[in-house]
Image (cartoon, rainbow, N blue to C red; front, side, top):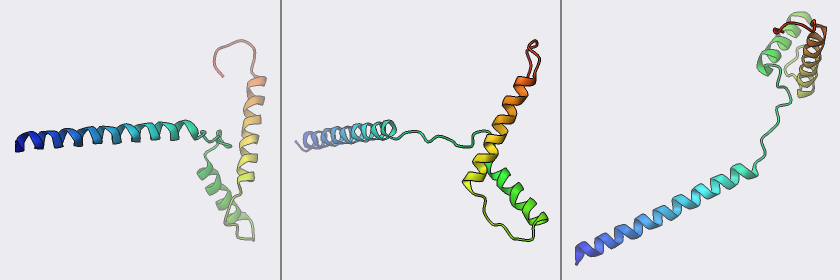
Length: 99
C-alpha cells in the first residue's frame, strides 16, 4: 500500500511539473512574440570605436575636455557613411561583378 501511494505521489508531482514547464514555455513564447525587435539606428558603424576615436581626437586637438558622444552624433556619422557607400556604388562602371 505504501508503494502504491508513493507511486501515485510521484505521478502527481510529474504531472504538476509538466504543467509548470508547459506554462513557462507558453509565457516565454508570448514574451518573445510581443516584444518588438529594436532597430539599430547605427548599423553601418562600430559605435564604441567611433566614440573612442572622437574622444581621443578631441582630447588631442581641442582645449575643452569632452566626455560623451551623443546618439545624434553617432547617427549623423552613420548617415554620412551610408551616403558615402551609395556614392561609391553609383560611381562604379556598369560592367563587372565586384564592388
